[in-house]
Length: 495
Image (cartoon, rainbow, N blue to C red; front, side, top):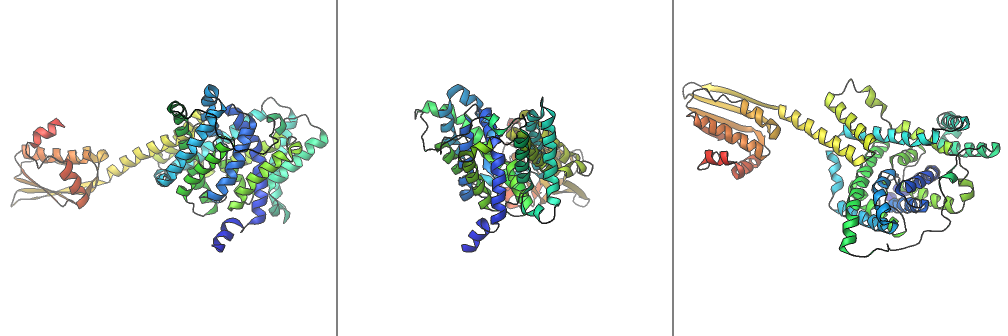
């Protein structure tokens, strides 16, 4: 117990505290921006980010991953806030959390095994592009000072780690933010700052229950939004956990993460915050700044609240150019550059899945649409590929005038036409044996194909025997097959 506590909380204290500080600084403008997107007061996003980060540190399934208010979730809230107001958003946040907790208990996090690597790569690349695009408003129609500050920030981020000893002790994004803030204040530069994003809260969040009628009508209003937020939140969280798993070479408990995200969202809703989920950008900032354990996530949430309440006079002076530089670094680090080099090496189907995922996510700004499109395409390509791995050979016994067909491989909807086409129904033989001892039948389409083959041979006057069915295949054939039942032809035509 103590060893586990030491490993997941206190094995990297200095790195976790410093990275938590950097993440907290990066969370502030994003939380404010996402609140503005959703059409609510900035404190709604800031309270949510604080609460979700603190709660998920204890109940999440992926140590070191950062969860807070996100743009993907904010986009789903716009219409609800516009039509019904903040109270309904808080109610929808509570329901979102409840649905995610249920998903965790139903072990839906295990469904991530159906998401192929090409979909994950496309998801990562799309997020990198979206993160970069989100910085463009800060670099449009601005003075040359902003470009100079952003370039200087990138220089600090990438060059500071090259300094012996010191470069490894302090995260370069923290140095970037501190130095550029000092320069902006010293030179009194007229550039956009965090304070220009919106007013920071000046009080602690308080417990409150959404002021909405507890009726079926309320449920009908918030349920569609809650379902959408629950799905998108879990998708982004599961994808982010996969990426952090790869970076740290450690496993995560996805079903616990589902439950943790739900509990965190319930907590956010009860403290006046909006729903959130894992953040790939901040999670990568955390990893690159040295964060590894749950302490880094907890520190990010606590530092966020302390800075907002105590250091607000300093925070509002942080130039947005400094944070833009940090987010550009995140974008560059997030993008899978190997995926571009592998376009020539990987199969076309893999490349198509990756590219389609990127295009759909960037075009719609909806992670769920992109991931579902990628999963659907990958499934179709897989079904087509597996359908090709079926071989049917035959030999003829002249003494008994029997043709024996031997089927090897998987027979399902994708392979059914090939299965039927592999038999010669015009050959005049007395008997046909179909040996299925090395085949497996998966669905009713495959069973229907077997029915057609058997009945066509019988129509040509041959005696047909099906042998070698394994137990699972025999079960589905006995249940849905008609070739060995009375009036087989009529039943097949009826189907």
